Image (cartoon, rainbow, N blue to C red; front, side, top):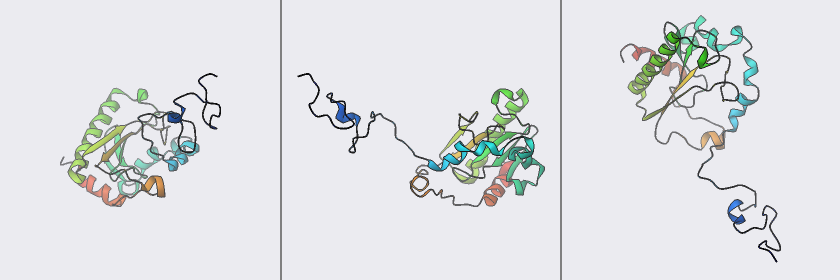
Amino acid sequence: MDERSAEPGPASSGYPGDAEATDDFELAGVPDSFQRLWTPYRMAYVKGGQGQVKDEESCPFCRGPQRADEDSLIVHRGETAFVVLNLFPYNPGHLLVCPYRHVPNYTDVTADETAEIAALSQHAMRALSATANPTGFNLGMNQGESGGAGIAAHLHQHVVPRWGGDGNFFPVIAQTKAVPATLSDVRKQLADIWDSV
């Protein structure tokens, strides 16, 4: 008889050590050091969100600057880029820094746009620090549909304030994100302090 068990379980090959590669329900998987945060509500972006933006006329980042700051949730307008609140924030004060031009990739922006996007991102961090006292930040650009961009057609940099313990079970279990301030109030606070930080 070889090393295999005479009666392996349904998800087991019968080799020693297989117990570590299954769970209590005998589902296959190799344990690793990663913890998973399941976010099923993001499927709305993954499945069909990109189809909403077909051109500059249907792009919220192109149309926003054509309206009043309060209506579009714009915090600050620069020369080549602007800062706007995310309509569906991960955390209160979640900002987006967008070029005015309708370009999809970071490689498409000019040197002037690149410099202003960086400067506005730094300024956004200072404004958020002054108004909300976060203990950390996430900054990043998701490039393309497969890169996770909610609106891949128009480049935007995320500036997300973070606090210890701000991730909780609500989004995963209850499909609910607790945001303790209205978007209009957050926009006004940031806009009011922007020039003084």
